[in-house]
Length: 303
Image (cartoon, rainbow, N blue to C red; front, side, top):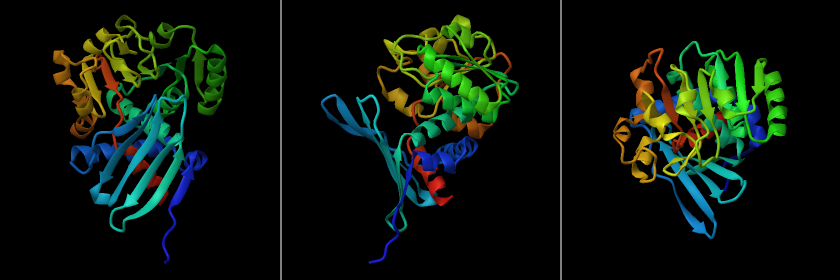
């Protein structure tokens, strides 16, 4: 029996095949699909085995005849992720990706879409707390959608921080400066990214100047949050890529407050043509939009 062999891609294949700019465009299209009811996205699920869990997040796009899921382990310092794409017309697996780069890229692309909509058009300075793989990719995404002239970056590991800021400065052709404290990273920033695993706040409301946009990627739960609660409650606009999931989580930091009713969906804001004022503080809470890995991998596969 003759059959098509699925395309199997690894991190380096994906890195060479798609740009951050392309990824942002694919993800923005996924938000349009969500707003218009053209995506199927069940909640993530999984099984536990001791301290380790296997988690899967499925998603499908009926108009494109694709369906798939992302599989990964939690409870380990690092593990491979598997993303699959099925053609629902033929029932065949079209593509598989193995590694971590696709997930990092799609999270950065979601962040880039948020920055493009919610930050001021004249934003020039980017502040990053948590300058690891995800923080670096968020910086690249921000530079795609805004004319960033300077980046201030903080990471607890000063040796790695110095090395990575030098490397990114050369790659982007702009000043990427390591700083000694979180406050130094954000006090002059027009856009702030927090990409930490911290269970205690890494930024304070009083450090943020009017007109700033913030992307938060880390924990946002009661007693376990990288954001000062007053930072969230004091923001003029708070939105997420998957607010319906946050509303179901009783430990979510806004649960039990009136602010949870004002939590907006980024998909709806993109489609409504949202415009901000110059003084507003806007906040994007990244949760993970199920199905975006599938759509992005399908794009790469077809390309």
